[in-house]
Amino acid sequence: MKIVKEALAGTLESSDLLVKVAPSPTDTLEVMVQSEVIRQFGEQINKVVRETLEKMGVTAGQILVDDKGALDCAIRARLQAAVLRGADCNKIEWSRLS
Amino acid sequence: MTDNTISFYIIDPHKNEQERADVAKLLAQCDLDFENTVEIFVVGRQNGQLAACAGLDGNIVKCVATSPDWRGESLSLRLMGEMAHVAYELGRHHLFLFTRPYNVEAFQGCGFYLLAEVSDQCALMENTPFGIRNYCQSLARLRKDGQKIGGIVVNANPFTYGHQYLIRTAASQCDWLHLFVVAEDASFISYRDRFALVQEGVKGIPNLTLHPGSQYMVSRATFPDYFFKDKGMVGECCTAIDLLLFRNYIAPALGVTHRFVGTEPFCPTTRKYNDDMKQWLQTEPTRGSPITVVEIPRTAVDGTPVSASQVRRLLADRDLEALTKLVPESTLALLKNKYMPAA
Image (cartoon, rainbow over all chains, first blue to last red; front, side, top):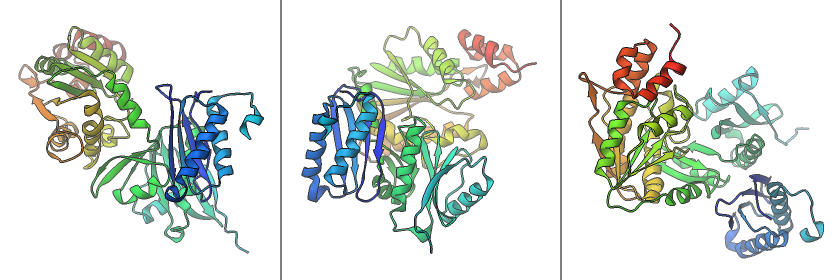
C-alpha cells in the first residue's frame, strides 16, 4: 500500500510519539526516526518501525516518527493509525497488524 | 481540590474578546506581539488560568508562548502536539515557524526542523525534514549545464518593460537563466495573472526556465514583511532568512551562480532587499557557495526608471497614456479589463 495523503497520529507527550506520514514524490519509502532515547533504544525503535511498515505492506511514503520514549506497542499502534489514515484504505486486515 | 489537568481548545481571537485579551497578555509577558493575522489560537488553561497559547496564520505557526509559571512542565510539547492536530484537520500539513534562535532546540523537540538562522535574530523552521529536500529535488530535475547560471525572482506586480529589460539583459549574459515568480497571493495583482503576464513577456528567450514560486522564496513564511511594506515595516532579519534559503538550498539545487536584480529607485523594501542580497548571497560566510549579485540599472522611459510601483500609481490615477509606455500590451490589456479603478 502507498501513502496517498498526509496524516497524523499520536502526541508529543512523554512516553508517546507523533507519527506523520505523507505521499512520496519519488514513489519510494522513506523513514525518519527521531527519538529522545535514540542512543539507548534507537536500534530497537527502528526495528519496530520497519517491521510494522513491512507487515502492513507499505511500499511508498514519507514516514516521520517523533518518539518521546514510547513502548514498542505504542509505536506500532501510532504508526498503524497514521498509515491507515494516510493510505486511505477502508478494508483493514487486522490479522496483519498484530 | 484543584484540578491539575490542563485542557486545550481552540479559539478565534477575532470572535472571542476575553480570550484574545488573555492571549495578548500572555504574549506581552513573553515579550511577543499579538499578531492580528493569526486566525486561530490553541490555548491551554488550568483552573481558568491561561497557561499556554500558539497561533496559526495560514500555515505559519506564530505567537507561541507558555506562562512562566508553567515552564519545565513539558507544556510546549502538549501545546505543539495539539497545534499539529488542529492544523492537519484544517488541511495545513506543511507548517512553518519563525522564532528566536534560542528557541530552536525547544521547537526541534516539537517536530520542527531548522531551515535558516540569523545569529541572535531569528530562525525559520518547518515541520518536516522532507519539505525543503523534496523541493530541491524537484528543482534539481530542471538543472541546466553551463558556466554561468543566472537566477531572478520577480513579483511582477504587474509585469513591466522594466522586468522585461532586466530578464533579457540577464539572459544575454548567462548560459541559462532561472526565473521565479513570487507565488504568494498577497499582492495587488493575483499570482495567476502575474505568472501569465511574465510567461507572455519572456516568450522567445531561448535560454530561460520559468518557475512557479514557492513558500521557500519571498513568501509569507520566508519574508513576511515584504507583503506589509505599505505599512512601512522592513524587517531586519527577514531578508536574511529568505536570502539564506536561496543561497543554501535553491541555488545549489539549480546550480545558480549569479543572481540578477534591477536597481531600485523607489521602493524602500525592495531597495533594502537588494542591499541585503550582496551581504547574504555574496559576502556572508555560510554553507552555500557565494552567489554573485549583479545589479542591472533600470531601464528608463522619458528619463524616469520603470517600476511596478510607479505603474500601480498611474493605474490608480487611470493614466492610460503614461501606462502604455511602461508595460507590454498584455499587461496593459489585463490592467484595463480587471484592475483599473472605476472612474
